[in-house]
Length: 457
Image 1 (cartoon, one colour):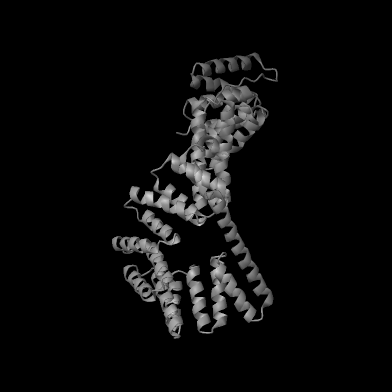
Image 2 (cartoon, helix red, strand yellow):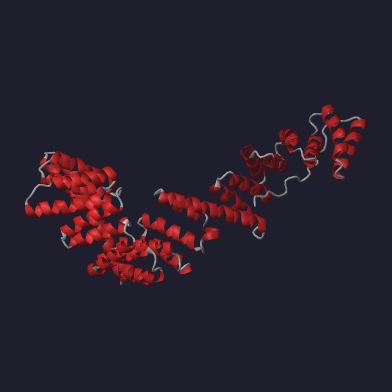
């Protein structure tokens, strides 16, 4: 629950003017009444004092306290502001003004006073707490955590501060998860690292950090954090999938297969785990087992598109073009808006055309339909480029290869083929650029394989 502490510590200010005995008496009477919570009586005397001596901060402060006590915090705001203006070096004055603005539901306006309070007194845990709690209320989790971290360092055993500190960390972690979904992995990692204090022994923090590091190609820390997440929460299906994806990416096929074989028994009803086990089998050259598993998965989940893609790859590897076309048509029936069905049919038709020395026009039609359904499909762009090459439509092939590398900058074959077509068109500089990119991608993949082999020893 959102809370602020120590909002209204009474500040006593010595008057810097000579007053009449009557004003002194009225001030003393007003302050005494305020301290007895007799605010109606207090306000009569205190208002008379500030009319006569407008720069009397003590009276303004007492008026603000009384208005708040009487349930009129909106009336107190001007008095708190007046005190702060009269005593600009008083951190308490700015702290109280900020607290009043929170009460009247103006957290945006409260930020500036709280910032002044912490600048004037960096050792005030109340100031940092109030600033952090306000930032948290405004959804500024990252800055809130920094402020609350300052408060916690000052009072490490304070339960209220610790809870707010943990809440800010948890919200920052949620923001990091959102950044990961957006592909902003470095920002996610930086945010997670900021809140490591309260979260570094939690499974989710380790998983999110490990996944960010994985996508940033930071092999060793990624593996450590992903493994720790799964150790802390071994029944979390998402953690299993993330670690398995990491191992597959780095071609640690034996390890990924072992993980998913265990997971497939634990999560027997999970189509995601069954699919990843099939992928691990494919990458380990255990294709017959993959085909059996994928056929069963499709039978149970007839519209599960990823299973069709994986099974299609098996048929493609086996050069069973008829089975590939039939699989694509089946998906078109089960899921009419799925680009994958048309893609699979197009690949099958293209390869039949290549083997029979016949036209690639049927393949072009199917692949163009796939791209109408999913313009971002790099694999459909690549296969359409091959079909256009088959038809000797090289300009169109170049366009599709350019689209391929736009959607998938690390598509090795696309860069190489684009280089060849640029070379054929007399575009030497463009061709050399594509060949250089192709070479760097090959070297990168080689380095990843060597790294995995070294770690496996």
